[in-house]
Length: 115
Image 1 (cartoon, rainbow, N blue to C red):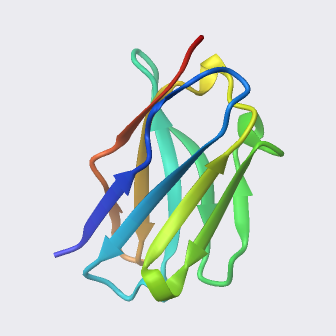
Image 2: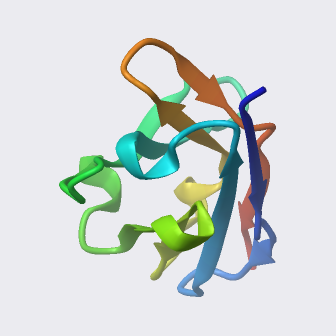
């Protein structure tokens, strides 16, 4: 029933910017914590950013001051604005929704940072 659909992944050069989107359905979006994780080949999935229903945020140290997570409850959508991208940001980025009982995941979108 719950669906999370990511979009916006692309190939960008180092120093560039990109905005990811995640459209959610099947739940009361405004009441849920939402977030972004990423996984690079051969590495474990890692937290990128979280945003709560009250818009408190949490960021991984590696992306602080470069990435911004936000939510638009009217559109049931969260965003990840990524600036000053580095090669080490290359990964599949996954959207997640936490409803207090279970976690749900999207299919992922590929972000590649390369010259």
